[in-house]
Length: 241
Image (cartoon, rainbow, N blue to C red; front, side):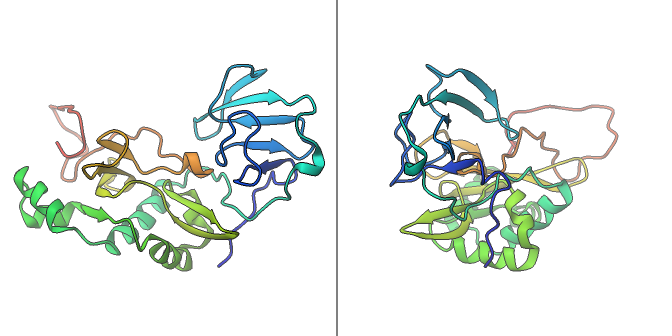
């Protein structure tokens, strides 16, 4: 399996457990220039000489290190997922559809949807699935075999670095996956209804922004069956509604 290197690897180095960010002291998400002069911290803005949004819309705070880190301390670039721009709707729909086809729908999630008034035929038609804790890497490996490097532009897909090894997997807490569709019916994002006990809010988009990958943006969901032209449009909160 080939994991492409980032185009700016000659300038930036990703932090790690052995080389944490010199600003927030965390082992992920941040970067340091190869010459050790600037840190791009994703968490701490205080003291930064510049703040900006990256191409995925995530905040980034640039800090001068003033000799706190020497170039000799900076680790060499490691294979990691590039900060690819978000894939086009056609690619997102193809990869997300394949991902959902490879996942089951748990009895608990099916029962929850049925309590909302959805019959089984609509549950299947709309593509609801369950995101488990285990088995994600194998599914993404199969997706990469099918779609190649295009998977790195799909929000949620990222490269996990663990104990000196790298593999591609999917981010996000375990929960119910809800397809988010555009006006053409294409799946352009996935939202997770987190299972009880998971950290964070009840709902969140599947995203890999914090892992150096693509973000979903804030797409407007158009449910299946909505005509392209309607005299009356009702806007409501939440894709399940």
